[in-house]
Length: 287
Image (cartoon, rainbow, N blue to C red; front, side):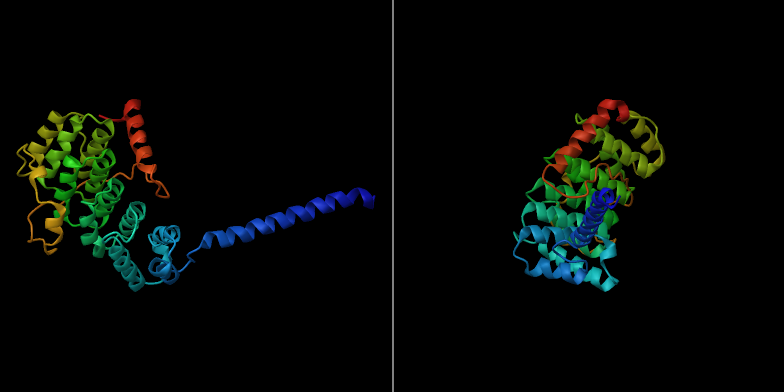
């Protein structure tokens, strides 16, 4: 009888050892190479020569639970903002920094994110637009509307609409710009503009430009149907101005839809977002 039970006992011991090994590897794997504390992650950001390790630190610094207190978060925002200057990091890392700054929702990141709206890399501009929607002020809405009008990338224009969704501006020029994009050739941009308008106004008068402009003319003071947002100052001009509401008389309110927000940031993510938006449009969910 004992000889029959030996193989069973052996299999059980192997199973227990395997489970223990997986648990241990999982525990240490969660910590990764940058540790679990804000202090450790910031140390890697400043001193680690491996860009992959720094990238991991940038991603984890965007989680509020990483911090023990507000002062740590303020320190991290200052460090992350500084890393956006010049060529300290490759574009994919700068894009992740922008995302983390947006997730932390600290106003101290505003100036650095505005500058990134003019970055040469489309992925950086895309993440900066989304992040600015979370940390910006009313006057920044015109920058996102301008980006939606003139950015050279599909994803940048969609992200600008998503940023407007979070800011919720009431500036008539911004609302006109969004309504005009309901006729955009790109279905994903049409969908983003439509969701933004619904989120800003709380209304849904239809899916065409005329219906929305008629609604806006009745309900938005100062609405004229003209949208000169493309002629507005560039982000670099506005970033240098003081943040006082009187510094520039622009927006107040706009919409937000997280759309496709990948957990990690990889070069193919943005193309995947574009495909997802187009697929949604073909299924009939876009105006």
